[in-house]
Amino acid sequence: MNVLRAWMEERLGLRAVTLFLEKKEVPRHKHTFLYYTGSSILLFLGIQIVTGVLLAFYYQPTLAEANASVVRIMTEMPLGWLVRSVHSWSATFMIAIVLVHLLGIAFTKAYRKPREATWVTGVLLLGASLAFGFTGYLLPWDELSLAATKVGTNLPKALPVVGAWLTQVMRAGEDVTGDTLSRFFIFHVSVLPLAIMACLGIHLFLVQRHGMSIPLEEERKGVKAPALPFWPNFAFREAGVWLVLLGLLITIAVVASPGIGPQADLMAPAPEGIKPEWYFLFMFQTLKLFPARVLGLNGELVAVLIMMAGMAALLLLPFIDNRPFERKGKVITVLAWAGLAYAVGMSIWSLL
Amino acid sequence: MNGRMWVMAAAGIFLLGSLVASGVLAARVQEAPQASVKSATATAPGQETPVALRPARERMAVHVLLGWVWLSIAVLLGLLRLRVREADRIFRMGLNRAAEKTPKGQGTDG
Image 1 (cartoon, each protein chain N blue to C red):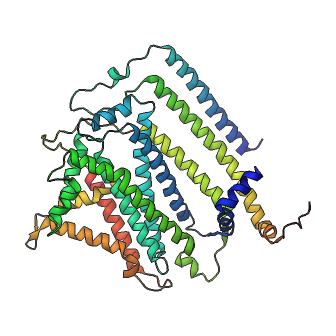
Image 2: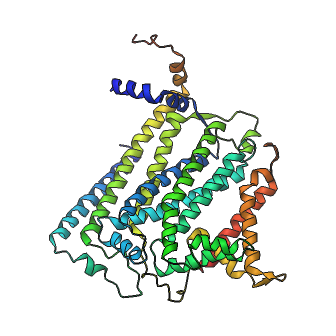
Image 3: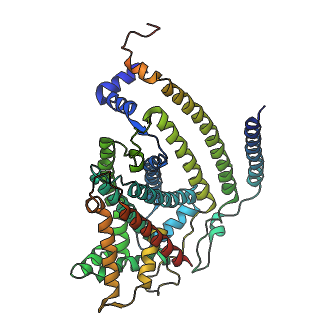
């Protein structure tokens, strides 16, 4: 065993990594639970990759076979329904934890100097996760997913100059067809994973480079926050959180596995009760409520522009709120709470 | 035996009991003739294919597996708790720093 360890060490130099982990410290305060969210996202991303590869062995991204292949996965493959259910639920868990992670950082102002780039890569990771959800939703190729994708890909059309082109790029044509399915599949299994890996690599490097941030209220106490060694004290705690999350995921996947609707018909009218995934519900409801014309402008265009401005503000938050870390930043806190209340309220309204 | 031990023993007996019971049920299901998967999943056009309609044998196996998963998680959490306590004690006593400072070859078992 020692010979093997020495052989590995000589070639990989892993001792530097273990030394780093032994020296790494995690601050202890009442917001320490937020530190668990980052690693939990990695857990669910890992589950997504493993289950995604398993599903890709049997899934066929063609107009004739997409829906049938998902039905086969669910009914004929041994435990195929469970793999699909775990894939679907771990996406939900991952996005929920990404949102908690992001809000936690926004509320504790951990995006301020020198962590601006960490925040930007984090928001890009959120965008990639949502894109995963959007592209994955079409893959079962049932009535609901087709209708929701038609609505979703129609949104950029409202934009001047680039709108029609963007919609065409997303759909691989004028309308949602089998080509759109192929394009979404390629994005889902190759473009987005590559993008997420690149962003994640930079994000993790920056997290290690700057260390874990301590919330402002803890810094203001003037006493150095007590810290815990990452290895093994924090890592074992993290392993406990992973185990509980894993148990919850498997349980929910077993008791509430998703079904699949009838194969999509390109000529059929949109079915009633179209709803996107839960994380797009607030946007969906906003668009539904927006008037057709606002100040003489196309209402949809105004809604899309407002949403884009919101996304840009989120991405550039560290540059908008670039005050020193010592400043409280009450306006940002109020805005974050207001944004959260709006998103939750609109999502609930959409479900009623 | 204190209260915590009683709770742990009761939880263990409950988990093991449910595993044994589900195993017995699973064996019975295996003995019964299985309905074909295709007929169980056939749906009328325009209807959603529900996941619940899968072979009873597989359903039972999954529930048994779920019981095992939670039992394993409970055991692993117990072990992790012991390791965390030990690591925290070593950290509080500063033994981890002492080990770092001790140069190689100067250990007590030298």
